[in-house]
Amino acid sequence: MSTNLADREPKKNKQLEDIMDCLLNSMRGTRERDENTELINTILKAKQEMNDAQNYFDNVTAPELVDHAIYRMEAAKSQYVYLLKLAKDKGLSVTIQPNGDKKVVQNL
Image 1 (cartoon, helix red, strand yellow):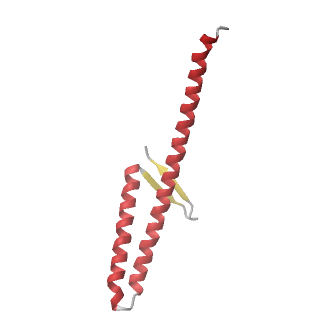
Image 2 (tube, one colour; image 1 turned 120 degrees about the horizontal axis):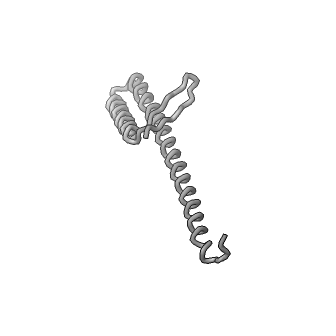
Image 3 (spheres, rainbow, N blue to C red; image 1 turned 90 degrees about the horizontal axis):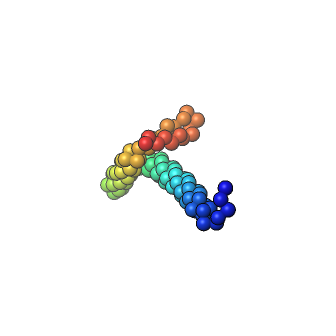
């Protein structure tokens, strides 16, 4: 083993670089998982909004509100379809268990 400090410095630098690379990759993976989870939750909310808009349309009685109900349904549907396309482009899929739990799957 060399006692020369100059010989040990490159090894230490390499080790530090490896550690930093590992930490950065781990952080990227965590951030990506968080973004994917957020996207899935946004999709689920958009689906609920679409269902709510449909329910509103089904129950509206005032003729003046029919156009509003249709607009609300179309807007909710457009948002939902857009978010599904984003998830598909990212290779995401969700399996919803019978007990309501979600399992996010990412196909790479």
